[in-house]
Length: 380
Image (cartoon, rainbow, N blue to C red):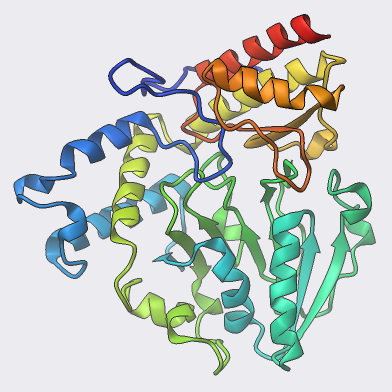
């Protein structure tokens, strides 16, 4: 991993006024302090109108200006081509587990790669629609035998001929496994990027569709962003609910019904903040530096370990275990007392997990590393 020196975020990481502490939650996750401060300032009196943005009609020209700007900023940050629609929807990423087969399966066959909990949930949901006769779901490969610490070699995958789409999860939040390069497949590529969107530059044109829950790198929970190529629209099953129909939502500019207005507004503020940091390329260098620092601390120690194959180690979600698991409770108690929050690993895998999304500063990661080294010295 690269260790190039890069500037840290300009947003304050903590101060006495806001009492901000290092928060390593996997989601809902840390939101930049500058974004929260601006939202606080505007909460009761947005744009001098004497009311909150939450109280403004979503169809007013004032609110439409927010949505137009947010989409334009996201398109710019990700270099989204013109032949893609950008949808700001409700239901989170998990609702897309149903929406995708309902919109794209259309009596055909779809390929799914399983690399962890979230991709396993996606294929399980898709199989429900296959059971109704809407198409066929094919598991091309699973990393279950490695306890989702590695990805099966692509030459072992059982890909379908003429698949309607190929689905995978680019970053498995729970297991800390990330696929950095898009799979080389013939079918339209569908990626769940909930935990890695906007963390590094990607080539959107390689994908048929990208979707991401907002509560990691975009803003608060309640919003999901869908980026879908135009040629994949208009194929929905007659069973597809209207509010889950991507073509319908594109026609209605994501406003078939009242959208999650405050989450959309906050997402726009996060996009502004990210642009101020220098964009996705700049934040990607900081993210790599944060991950390098934490992984080096783990790898240089006999006290901590990470079992994910090196080439698939996530730069957003870093699980780690203590050599003596009886110290887990002590680690969590002492880390919280030190002001380091939400380091407990997911119940499915145990141990610890540090989620270091865009809004988590390098300073916070250094504080975590300093604590880990002191804890090891004390308890080894």
